[in-house]
Length: 213
Image 1 (tube, one colour):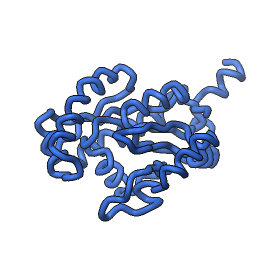
Image 2 (cartoon, helix red, strand yellow):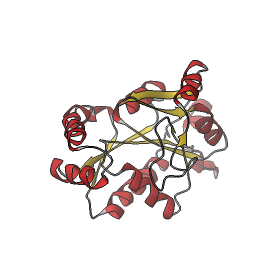
Image 3 (cartoon, helix red, strand yellow):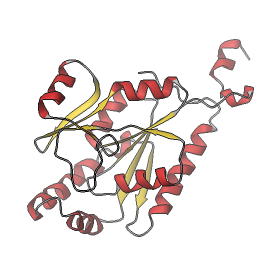
């Protein structure tokens, strides 16, 4: 085997740490992305959890710098103009985006990075970093998703139905993802366990993914 091919092999073969992963978790609004990430934190997953910048007001119980970087609309537009974001979108009149520095710093130090992002944003990351691991978090059914959104009480019934109408378009993007995990309402740990298994398998690839941003 040539030296070039050996360099591409999994570094664990030489007793070194595995290649850091960039893991993207996406799915419809209300499917439980935040709950999954919170449970992963509670279980001590050794990830750098990227905090997304957001121009909307904080909801009760949310913590600035933990749930989101809450910034003004003016500051967000500055970040766009200064090319400080890997991906951003205007969703329902509010801005969301991912700061570049968090991903680059974490991966440079050898840490895995996990992103929670909407489906359109995942498509943008796919173009920029095709070697990332893309996981689609799906609801068990539309009725279950409607129930989740109504329980959340952050959208009006009309907004809930508008979000549900988007799900078919979001599901149509499944071919852009590597894995799908069903997040049943009462089986959160099952979904988290499947994500853990995906990450473990990715760490064992003979030729690991190498993300360059």
